[in-house]
Image (cartoon, rainbow, N blue to C red; front, side, top):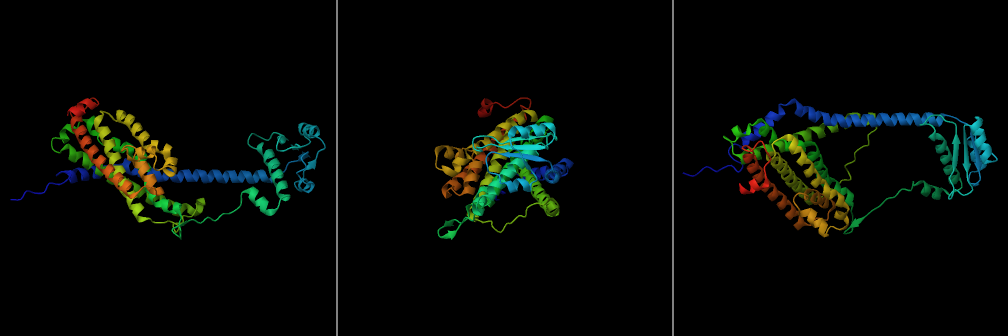
Length: 410
């Protein structure tokens, strides 16, 4: 009689997976965490919008306020008609202007020195409050800029204002090519990886610690193999993360559509995106390998330590390893073939970020992509095995950390 085919993850994998997912979905804290994130984003946008509105109204009030101004122009830059346009009066000497401000005859006095490149413009004014005293310098600067523009050709004035518009076109193999537009879609996987680790990293880390702290692990392992339990937990976590990400993105899109008109949010134009499918597929494969590797590593750390507090200490180390490659990000663009970039790209604990960045940029070769994907999945499988052994051993040594020596011996 033929032997039944053994499931790759164990007979109880679906049981563990379903139990973890359903148990978490029933928790109110799970849904509160999902709702809290988009609400926080909406709150931030609302605060920024309100602050901008208040600042705009304050600027309008400030602009509408009139105050007496005296000017002494030793530079000869400011034309007399500009002085009269703003209702200012010319003062013969610097000392006279300062004295009129002191005595209250003038609200403000501006002294423009003979050499504006060597000396500072001096601004004197009556105190009107710490936040409104800056209006004097703003008017003095605006007056100087307008005077310069009046005496300058329109094209030169446009250059000086920085208002020149540019239209750049690049070609590749005789066709118009926009590398930035091609980077956006693969780059989304990089952003998504950071968001998942930042928001859900602690959940991954504590996935096995709860059972150890409650000492439920010994009972669980009498009926379910440690490998099946670990893999079931990891894939359940990934499914829950996927649910959270989909719901959060959905809520953010709904909030964007509802509040776009009220908060003056910019329109999103997707027509300029370029879909380089080989690069996008590579990004998806690298992303999945990275998630499996990092989630397995988190679970392994949680299985090796007795409490959630100690697990949190190792979480900082993992985050550091993930962020370290960002300091070398310019090298990924300018020197992709350098030794430092190669080491960061193919060292498992730092590989996810360099691989995703270089793939998005377009300087990760086909062979390097294949090596990177295979390396991530193989390392993830190895970590799964180690995590299962740590989990099984931790059931006995639940009161202390697992030592490297004891792990190797077992």
